[in-house]
Each structure stands twice: as structure tokens, then as C-alpha cells.
Image 1: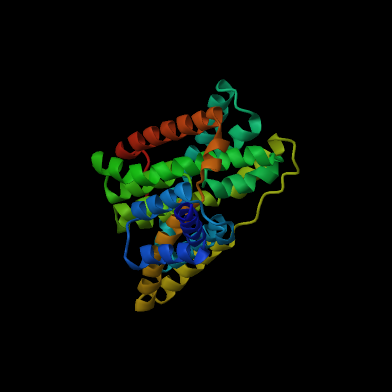
Image 2: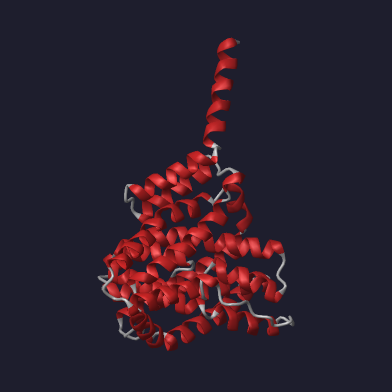
Length: 325
């Protein structure tokens, strides 16, 4: 009896320890300081989230978002504004084509799978633009229910985790150059965090191109939300440009005005380092409950849309149709 009570007490202490936010912060910091790979950081977070469950006090979704935004701003110090403008302008036509095509494809496949209008609009927006950020912006614009929003976010998040692990491997298998992979990742991977993580695992040039192209796509949140609100009979109040995008541009301007400062390289390197705890916390937000929330039809829609976009854009990138200057 004493042995049983002792075992229960021991298990309770382990549970209390694993649920302490400081332990999770220490794990995230360790991944950053040891230079862990993006895939390892995400897998560690996924394993911890599914097996243990992140404590509510940690608020992994909130902090991963803040760390990601800080990382993106810091990465701007490693990219001069003239290069950012060149890549952004050269990818404008490609962005318009792929965003519009993805939204139309989502509507067609979603109707065929009999996914409700709100869910297919949100999943299409997340796939077309920038994952969770696009969904969070479009949801109030079209008056989407909390359930539809949660389902769309869950679908996009699950596929983000898969993309972060699979894309670098497929890119090497297909013999993609740094530039090709950067363009492909920015178009076919949903969230900015997974784009940056996959591109950083592929190479420095891929990271630079992927970040700029993805942030260029993020600027489409406002006009797309405006149009979708009108189509759904809403007030058509598009969201404001997110502050971290302004911060990224400002950092790029500073790096252009004072190009010889070694400080900018250090800040850009810090931005890459912060991606490790960010990806760990992104993984930690995935729980068994969130997996059960997804449902079969929305998941099939997200998967079909993601695979179609990934395969099509990979072929166009390798064929030289989609590229940046």
C-alpha cells in the first residue's frame, strides 16, 4: 500500500514538474543555445505537446507568435531594402497569380468535398497567403464562427508541421537551387514560421528569398479580407498591416543606410537563433484535443489543396516559370 502511494506521489510530482512553465522555457532556451536544427526544435515541441501537454500558463500560441514577429524583424537587418524591393517587385505578378489561383481552387475542391463555406474560405485563405495570420484576419471579416476558425487553424497547423520536415528533403531530392527552394517554400508552405524554418534548414540564400517573398504575400491579407467580406455580405473592413511587417522594412532600410555595420549581422543571426524556441512553442500548441477538432472533410480539403499547390508550384519553379529576380 505504501509502495502504491509512493508511486502515485512520485507520478504527481513528475506531472507537476513537467507542467511548470520554467521547464518549458528552459527547454526552448536550450534548443536555441545549442544550435538545434529547425526540424529538431519542432519535433521536440510536438512530442512535448502531445505526450505531456503545455501548461496553460505558458501560453505557447501567444509567445510563439511574439517570438516569430521579433525574429522576422531581426532578419530584416540581414536584408538591405534595395534587395527586398527587387525581390518583392519581381514576385508581385507571381504572388497575384498564386494567391488568386489557390482561393479559386479551394472553393472548387471545398464544394466537391461538401465543406461548409466558412471553413473552405478560411482554409483557402490560410493556404494562399500566410496560414494562421490570414485565417485570423479573414475570420472576423466574413463573420466566421469560432468552430470554423478553430478547424481551419488546426488543419493549417498540422500541415505546417509536416511541411517543415518534408520540404527540405524533397527540395534536395528534386535538386532545387537555393533560389528555387526559397520561392517554392514561400508559396507552398502556410505559416511564416514554417517557411523560415524550412528555408533556414536549406541554406542562407533560400532563407533570404523565402522570407521576402512570404512577407510580400502577407501584404495581401488586407485586400483579400476586404474582397471576401464583400462576397460574404460583410462590412468589408480589412485589417491593418501588421506592425512586424513595418519593423522588417524599417530594419532593412537601416541596413541599407549603414551597410558596413557588423551589428546588423549579429542582429540577423539573433533572429535565426530565436526561430528555434519559436518552432518549439509552435509544436507545443499541438495537442490531442486540437487533432480531434480537425475533422475528416476539412482535413481532406486542406491536404488536397496543399498537395496540389505544392506539386504544381514545384513543377513551375523547376521549369523556370515561377522565379524572382
